[in-house]
Length: 573
Image (cartoon, rainbow, N blue to C red):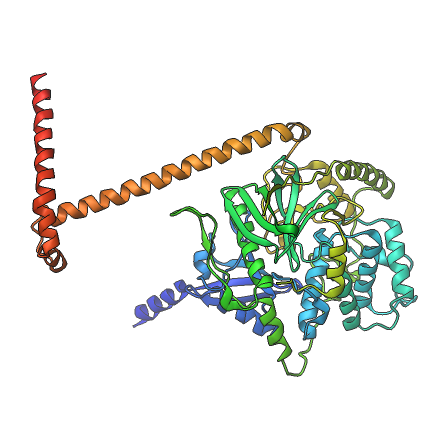
């Protein structure tokens, strides 16, 4: 009896596993779920824990053993998606940024989006000009510590916060001035709403950067935002395509293609190269999901998308979930008492240190830190000046969910726009794509200015994600940049020819395989003595009998004659 009970308990343990999800305020939610549980079950548990109804904007992200990030698919089993062994560690993040976050129905949703954008600001994903950065940081101060109080907030109190990867004394003074004079009396909810309104107007709002290279070998960051597809190089936005202009997203191996129709019926194709095939597939799936979410009117319009036009080749993927318009319509119907919010401003945070944690100490003296910062800024200036736009192949030939002010500003601006005072270079350890090589100078700059540098710190910050090399560089040195203009384009043409030849060979092999299978089936029908019902019915049809006596038997005699002739030649030799 005892052994039976023990064996049953062991079987139950084998069918269950532990799963830990790090939330946006860096607290952890741990649960035990069945081995065959799907992603939707785990996501619903987390949303119930957070008392969250407007949940379609969020997703669960995990990292595989190869350091590649993925979004958990809710329609598939969790255990089959994870390449590692349990217990599993994941994190809750904003997957689809709201087009107008300040207009979200519930305060709990706005607060979670606020935490995500605050995290983006800290890790360098949300990059902006200095004037905007000071205002955003001041709103964070007001939301977390309230009104300025000379008794509680001594001189230099803003320097104890870590808002950005880099700080300067001038910026810290500007943040404190705004907090002291312009934001007095604002509640945390009001400050968070104003923060969201300001962040939503920035060019890098909603950017989850995917490091790639263009056809000339220049590093670039690709991203999908609520308003369209964006390409960032240096400190500029070199391409912006609205979702209603994007017609197709495709990838083959490491190559990612974006097909679009712009004004005056001009067709363009943008081509970029990801560091690995897995990174390229992740980029493509993110693009397919974002285009479906923001572009379509109804979820019933979602179709399965193929990554290639060739038969028996490529990946197939279908977005599962509601689209943005349906989400906003559903949110308008929410009628309940606002849930209580436990803000994490005074709770120790692993990724965004608060004023209660004390200053972020550096082993480098302040004078030396300033000198190194100047040399780094000179390097960033040279990178800004050398930023190249991606070559575009042109051929002659429904409006987004964009707020009115944002739409007017976008239409008035040209394709290339300056996004900040420095080159776009998010913390490499929070990129969705792993990079093998390292850029030492920028790594030193992040360490000096207090951004995450150690593997252990970044594991705490982003749910167990180790640190990779610098995302914006891909280890590209000066020599590869000089040779990229000529050599990479020629190499690209050769790769295209090789891919075409491989596609033709693959199609030929598939055709030969099908013919071989049909031949085996024909031999079984005509020569075997298998007495199976469906074979017997086929043999008794008049068409088969005619084929057998008029075509197959003469062909068999001809083959037998030829084989005897070849055998005779071999014997005579």
